[in-house]
Image 1: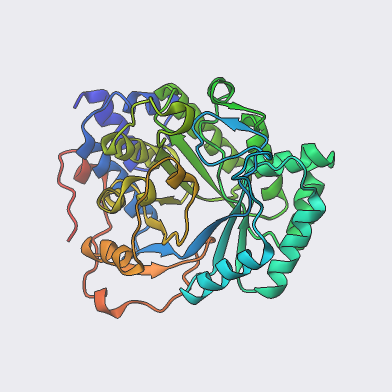
Image 2: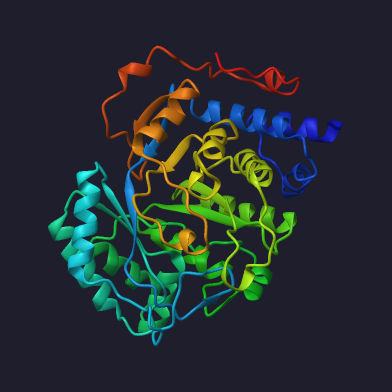
Length: 383
């Protein structure tokens, strides 16, 4: 490892903010264990607790009709397509009740940018679901969907968000972020929110007191400089609002028009997640993406900067449409956490613990006090 990379890793581990140039320089490092040790040290500094978390929710795609065209998406349909749908309300009820029965407390409600459904339709949907299931958080509508609501209805964005919040929208998912660089967005998508618009939805939501997650889908046409530009835009908005609860990244799953684009593998996923943990010094939580990477790499992600295994994901349709299907049971997720010496704990979208501690694993504490002196020679150990 060259001296400059060692210096940058030590700087991040010791809690100093990296510059964009230093973030780009880290992508010149192919010493994956060194990046992992540094990211794990930062994670342990932010999360010295002896547990790692997960949640139980369901990704309900209320429609697959979408006015946008995304080259990487195999899920969407145009309104005239024979497979186009809007879920009947009874089907939504059934999905939510199944989620509650499995211990879930949240529905991730996302669809396409439907060209005809008006804001009142979404308000009525939220009110209905919140009235029937008052304890279920509606983690609803991605920033591109919300920007679409604003444009379609010709209503100010703040009013759109306030009305949906009043109707029962509890938090925002980070979908539709892909790479927050307009060169990439213009190349991959049509009729979809651009970078500043995606960020503005989150900014206004945070100003209204809301919280959201943020994401990055990489491994397609973006450069590593653009990956850092994406992280920088997230970090800047978090400095401004503090409203992001977590960051999740995953690799593009080749499908639809981009079926011939070679998939990047686990090495690039772990490397990018580790660099994100080092760079995003003001976003406390990072989720593993086992849904796209599989159980073992998802588990390994907990040693590469993630402190959360993400969701049990009772249902997932978008990634599955591109041909990637990874499933785990709740016990498999909990075992993945236990095998690393942590206590598995269930949390909600706000990272509040909502379970009873698992006494079975309380006898396996994890040493969390780590400095750059422990990391750089490769001495980081879990005791």
